[in-house]
Image 1 (cartoon, helix red, strand yellow):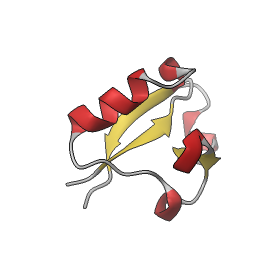
Image 2: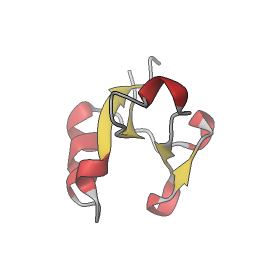
Image 3: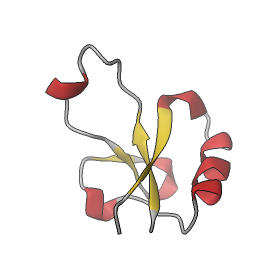
Length: 64
C-alpha cells in the first residue's frame, strides 16, 4: 500500500472541490498520478511535518 498527502478542505465544501495532491518540490497537483507517494504512513507523516503549511495536508492511502 502506498500513501500520499491530500490538501485538507473544510467539510462543508469538500464534496464540491476536486482533490489536490502534494507533488514534487511540494507543489500542488490535481493529477493523482503526479502525486508524491510514500511507502509507509509514517514516511508520509514525517514529510508532512516538514512542510511550511503542514496543517493544510492530511495523509491518505492511495489504495495500491
